[in-house]
Length: 440
Ligand code: 2HG
Ligand code: ZN
Image (cartoon, rainbow, N blue to C red; front, side):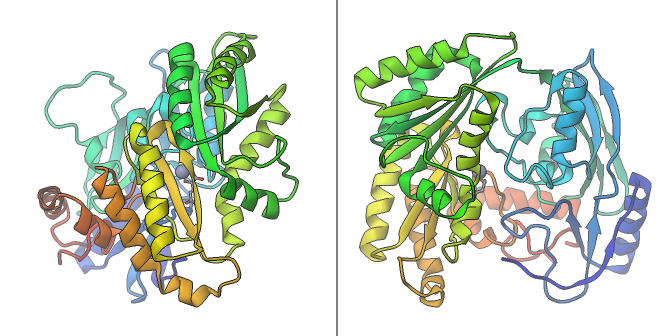
């Protein structure tokens, strides 16, 4: 979706080398664009088309520096691939819980820079909640050595939170101390058919009261989303008979081996059948079946690309408001743009919907693309009316700074700009990202 032209790409292997590059660019007045696994959906790691920006790739900084089991922490460099981090934790008998579709190629630096979310936020939080300390190269080349593995530290402002989610606009994260958790020894996975999004809200409350922290994932998807996967992703099949309007994928985990999670799921779903929240359900009886159910969820993004341009809207509203949001936005869109195919799915437990739009069946790409801004306005205005966020987990990148400037509180934007100006007065760190216009 995004193309740029870089002056050059530098690939430093150590923090000192990153600092040396940043210092040189600072002195020469050259803009830098940090890049990790290049999997972001908002173009945050893509340079502009001037051919004058330097891409600073962190992919050679891939050391696991330390695992401190007694402190339940792991210290890793920015270029470590998320999956390698998960594997390192697992080899140490622990869990690093961040999990998302791109985990085989996205990097820790990018996860931090965008405050990545994914499918286990419900239980473990976003990347922000998983981080204890950071090492950051500042825009003038100085290094902030904030790699502290402390769970308590009230010595003033918690600076790491400025850099997490700042998308490379305040400095370059080179390493982090991250939290580890006990590894799960039992997993229970269910795929359920639901009559309405309200049934999903009711079900999530019920399952949570029954299972408490064992509930690690609650994903929801519309029939349209599943149909795209069945049509375009090889080897996928519908686990249930007949079409149903909505589906949820529920995951429970326990640290106890052979924990009776299937029984918990059965009892939770039994009640849900009686109340009418659930129409049909299947519980995975082994890991292969569970993986097949997850493939249906994780295939949606790719499947939608086969249907022409996918207009992505990564929104969040309070969980309780999701049903009303869907009902009102669906109807406003169908009225203004008849026939558009609404592919809504996402991290229901976090109130985060990927409310993506495909062109009407049989229509050409170009006239549909021409409506992109108008469609976006309808969706973001509705999001705003529900007190939601126009970017829940993908960041702003170069895709959404204008929308953020429009829909965020002007005071918040003013404070953000003040912080940007203090840390990066020359505006050389990832210009054109997060903020609608550069500060230079
Ligand atoms: C997901 O949850 C990702 O599958 C991608 O955040 C969402 O492609 C998208 O819009
Ligand atoms: Zn997502």
